[in-house]
Length: 81
Image 1 (cartoon, helix red, strand yellow):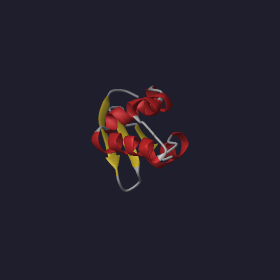
Image 2 (tube, one colour; image 1 turned 90 degrees about the vertical axis):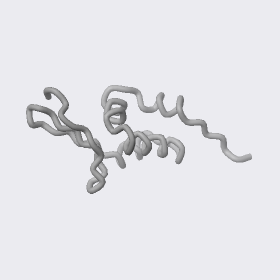
Image 3 (cartoon, helix red, strand yellow; image 1 turned 90 degrees about the horizontal axis):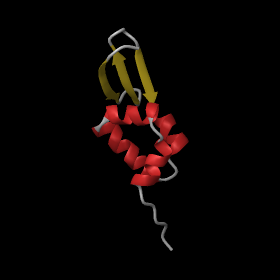
């Protein structure tokens, strides 16, 4: 993979697609990612926000970061007593 040309969310297949200058393409299946790492609706909501508003940040988090730690840090889940 060379330099990143574009990164966008594709609603047709629910993937964040990254296209590179060498012609390669990478598609991240957002539904599969949510099913694996999101434990509750608040974490899913945070991932959805990144998908729609910052797809390159989402891709970086999934490919290079630690999404479980990120989600535990940015979401606060308090069950009703």
